[in-house]
Structure formats: C-alpha cells, structure tokens
Image 1: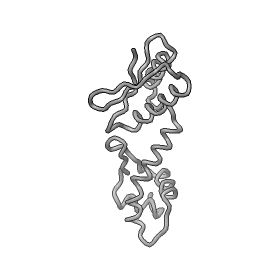
Image 2: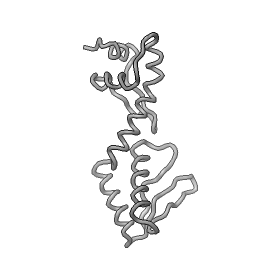
Image 3: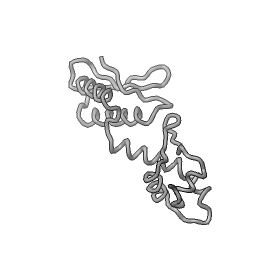
Image 4: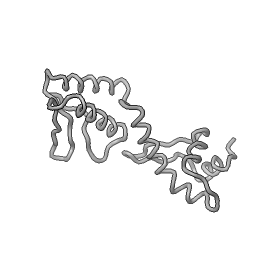
Amino acid sequence: MIRAFPYTEPQWLVDRMNHVHVKGELMDRYRGQWSVEWDDDGTSWLCAQDGTAAAEFLKSMVEQAADYPVLNEMDYGDAQFQGWGDALRPRLDRLTTGTIMSVDEALDRIFLSDLEFIEDEPMVFVLDATDEELRQVLEGEEE
C-alpha cells in the first residue's frame, strides 16, 4: 500500500495544492483503485494498493514532487495570488486613504519592485516590507 500527499491543518500551500491536484487526478482517472485513510490526528492520506495503476500514479507524483514541489503551477499560482491579495488588502486600505487603488494594480507595482511576499506560516502570506517601503512603491517613488 502506498500512502501519500497528506491533508492536514495547518498545511503549507504547496502541500495543500499538491493534495488537491493528485486527488483530482485520482478521482478522474482511477475510480475504485484508491481510497482516503484518516489518522487519529485528523490527517487524511491518499492511498492505493501496490500493483494498481493508481499506486503507480501516486508513486510518480511523489517522485515529481521530490524533483519540483509544485505539481500544478496554474492552480498553485492562483492560490498564491489569492493569498498575496489577502495579505495586501488590509495594508493597502490603511496606506492609501483618500486614493483609489485596486489590489491588482498594487500587486503589479509590487511585482515590479524588490518587495516580495513570503509564506510566513502555513497558508498565511505577508509582504516583507515596511509601511514606508510599501508606500514608496505604491506611489511610484521606489529607486
């Protein structure tokens, strides 16, 4: 039996998105060949019996994730972008009083700067910048 891609709370975004991607593929392509098993702590695992196509698929996904952790760039990027917007929105509201700037416009300016987001704790992003650094980027004053 192979057990892979646990789903738990809290969980880093890449691990969560890999679980979702692999589970979706299993659901679409390997009906009846896999299952979900739960540990006492609430962690769920994607499982398949050795010798099945689903087990071979799971093994290949584990190998791919070892080479490059993100299995589905598009879905991961969408979730990451959402996290960045969630992290930015309160600061944008606080720093741009009296000015109208969309989150998308602010993100565009941030991506053109040296500022960056980090996943500070599982699935929680923060912008690694002081308010003054962010204000300068938003106002177009960065050097």
